[in-house]
Image 1 (cartoon, rainbow, N blue to C red):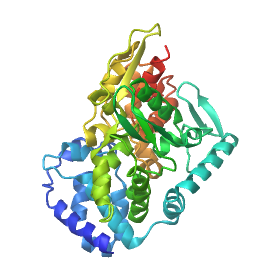
Image 2: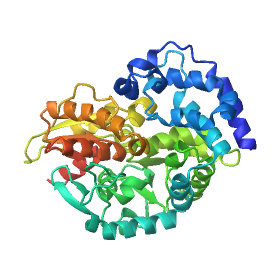
Image 3: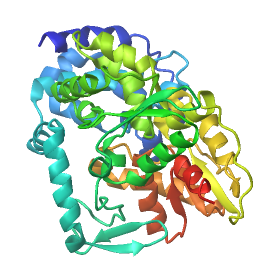
Image 4: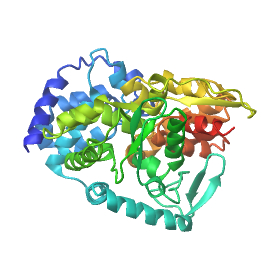
Amino acid sequence: MEELARLMRELEDQLVVCMRCGMCQSVCPVFDQTGREADVARGKLALLSGLMESMFDDPEGVYQRLNKCLLCGSCTANCPSGVSVQEIFLKARAILTGTIGLSPAKRLILKGMLANPALFDRLTEWGARFQKIFTRPVNDIVGTSCARVMSPLIQDRHFRTLAPVSFHRQVPSIERPAGKSGLKVALFTGCLIDKMFPAIAHSTIKVLDHFGVGIYLPENQGCCGIPALAGGDLPTFQKLLAHNLKHFETGDFDVLVTACATCTSTIHEVWPKMADQRNRKAAARLARRTMDINQFLVKEAKLRPLTDSKGKIRTVTYHDPCHLKKSLRVFNEPRAVINAIPGCKLTEMAEPDWCCGMGGSFNLQYYDISKGIGQKKAAQIIDTGADVLATGCPACMIQICDMLSQAGADIAVRHPVELFAEALDE
């Protein structure tokens, strides 16, 4: 209750900054789909201005309205008053959840699974073993499958399945000294890369080796905590934060690197702001040393173009993950990585930084809106005539794979570091 009271005080101070100018309307992907004032940041902030009263009058209604948000940060990035909408919404969700509690489904997923990394690993490993019984491939180029039997949860989604073997099983840990670069990084894997896209982690290690960068990869890493926090489960977030700090605080490294835009943004921006008093200083220290892999390659590893290869020319278009561009202002660096790869011709889409519509659990709760946003993104990708869609966020990859596959497009979806690692073999 003391922690919730602190969040309430901070929330009240932040809400007064909003001028209700409506600038957020023009950049909100959800409002673009629904046209409803209640779905845009200004409408939600107006609602939160009376939060104390609303919590008692209709806490469930307030909570549902707040959940109808992608947390993409488009409003924050374009707010002339500098309102930190994402931070406000995360605090508000935590306050409301502390009041009304978690739903049984969220309690099972967040407190029962996510809060226990070892159990979460075992459950996903079992899922990987039996998933072929319930799924069938639909697009080999995009790499998607669909359900053999329609279900209310999966609906008509085309999805990437779990990797047969998770990354942490293939590479439990690494302790490798710095090479020619004189640098050593800690590698934070992230749940989606570990369990769905281990090739991204392998590519990251390969590219770091190429630049002579040492690696510290601690075993038994946990989730960065953003799914729990976005769901309003502050205790689970704090538990996961403490778990990860314990593994990384003792490591000897210069920079913490991730290949997941959402993890990078969470560690860099969210950890120091939402950590409890006990872990706030440690979280801030680690946040200051955290970088996206593309950012690290350009600014620290001194990225240089690879020599010409005999590989075929591929047209690549790049999607800016919201958490990378809007939260961290990282957008030139991934393009520099792509441009350093022989045979890759970068062609920009119409709105590369327009949200893909994923939004984590938003995709599960509001798939019709999520799909509408994603279809707009897929159309822009297809219009470029690209062979490959590159992006630095595994969650965006899941959403874009779904949309491209449903559109019948044969466009591969890759991380920039994967493309760079492949070029090292040519």
